Length: 195
Image 1 (cartoon, one colour):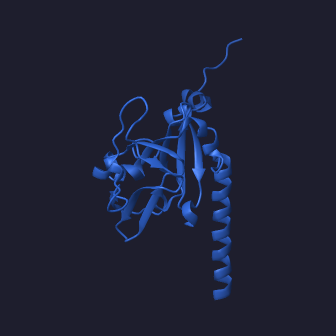
Image 2: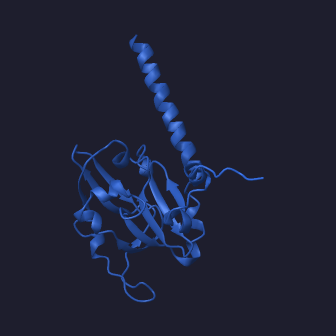
Image 3: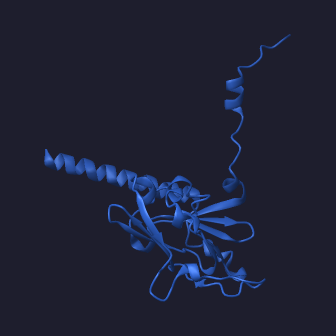
């Protein structure tokens, strides 16, 4: 009994997609409505070695509404610049210590909007992504890879507890769905009142 050769396209479609490097080696955690600002969500990519990469979540206004980034600044105040962070040695001497709410950078958009990106995890600042200063568009094009904001190393003792205030991928997706339902219901209600 011979079998007909399968359609090559169908065979490719049946194969499971190969997970990306980020999906393979990092666990995604989310912080929704950072500092009480609606939809300003951040994504924390946690590696098994406890390093955390801070990025923007897909629902952040900078990624959602087709905004144009005018500039990005790691200058937090007159006395504090994340670019001055110099780390050296095994014990990461010189690294700036960050709390969960510590600002990492500010994103300025062409429409006048300004967004402050926070650390979301306690730990030492290992590096900031200077590439986004020169080419801000990569923050929007590749937010989980080349467009990351910073890399933070939590204290070893706290590496398990840093995720306590964060959402899993599934919990975050539920938050986004609830938001969509709420905005859809609100817009329907406004339309019926106008009629």
